[in-house]
Image (cartoon, rainbow, N blue to C red; front, side, top):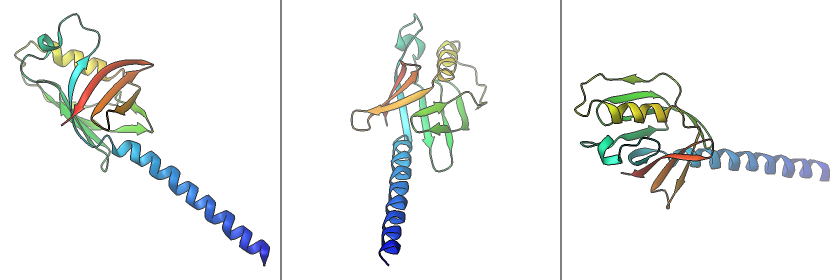
Amino acid sequence: MMKKILTLVFLGSVLLSCNTIKSKKSDAVSKLEGTWELNYITGPRITFDGLFPNKKPTIIFNTKDNQVSGNNSCNTYTGKLVVDGNKIDFTQPMAVTKMMCLDGGQGETTYMKILQKITSYDITDDGKTLNFISGDIAMMRFTKK
């Protein structure tokens, strides 16, 4: 009788710990949900405002449908959201509209190229700031809209 009770207690604690792990993982991913606006990008010698004179890029996460979309300052893009914990992958092909850009597309091209280099993310400032990281270098920063 005691063995059965111990087995049930053990199984119950294993099931609880599995659920806790799952909810923590989904909590991290669910914090991505919504619209974010770019306010920093690394690399180019052109100023941020020079790259994006008319419109700042946005990224929208739909974690329920595993979709990512947004606007790269001129054209809209959409694709599959590939995320595992804090690892994120934008190397999957994305559908991008082909409108002519007033800035010659330099901001758009820079944004899409750097997006493909991102390997992980972190969310700071009580969920208000999203940092995209390549290796251990912060490449892009977004604020929650």
